[in-house]
Image: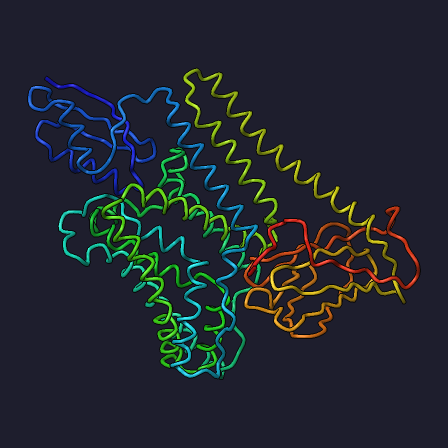
Length: 527
């Protein structure tokens, strides 16, 4: 006798999981039809209850290391889990921003065209620490095990290391191919031409990568099923052709290839080396040796995660997914700084607001009218947080302007600042008056993080040197101009006022002193 049932399934992290469950069910004696939806996390199954029982079907699914949820109604445990995970994500992100832990991994020296091939390998070793800061989340996302047990045919001691190995092979292949192309371009141009993506484009690419990492991590955690609709997927026809297991095995390699195009300071400096080589084979060899240098640490990170995960898959997957989200947010922050589209302090507000809204949306409510009310309130929380950020920024700007006591000296505003090892200063200037910003860089204050700043609104790219540094510009419009380091990890604000505030006038010839000690705005790094 045919009977149908709908089961809610937990633990699916991608469409391959749904395909795997579907294929297994169809091969099970007594199952007539089976369809599995990754987006909705459900399985609709028709079976002959004379041949197989529902309990047996559930056992078949759970043997694949997925969880069957029989009661999908109100669950305080589900809300508690969501609250706990989101709280950890927000807390870790705030800690990263306040302490600047990722910025500690910035390389102190970049490659240049005069370095030998051996030195390029050493530079790769040194900057691989930076790779963990920039791409560690992507690496983790490809190496975290999807199941507690190996897949069919996935046996042997090396099975756990295959994803990490494939990911790094993809990176090496991509770096080498790019080096060949740049070397060929250099041969056409005569070698030595400048290269590198614009700061704005770097920011946009990092924003896209950050968003994808956040969505990927949240989907791995299974918090918000509706986000699964935004997952990038292989076309169904291609997926069927390749096959589920082979597609899963090839995914880390493909992601590694794409990762090779992720712009960052060390990589762009290597692009210059490859371009200046003036020979496609020399360019490819340069990038190949550099990429080999980055492999040991990245491979070790991925291998350890993969190996541990075979015994503690659920715990490793949860912890790893949380890290993927946090590192994705960090990359999103960097992209926001470089592009100017998303101020990092606004991102921090949005992270907290979306965390609160996420907890509210996780509350199981059966009546549609009440569910709609919760949706509206959640949206109001996010909008209200943005409005509060905007208001607070305006008040901060007015307060700083009133405290500056600044007046132009000889028609030039002179601002004195001191570069510290871990921070950029906020300064306040008057619109329409040329600015002479004198930044003193004491011995030991310059590092691989803060040595270069970008002030995009004024088209300024400046590299610090020990001693006195002078940056000159003329602010035209009032408002807040944000600037950042070359990686988007450290940032500061230039508050431009109209000079009419009550405290904005002072004795002629006065000099504004910009304090290097800042209120928290996410600028701390390399402490």
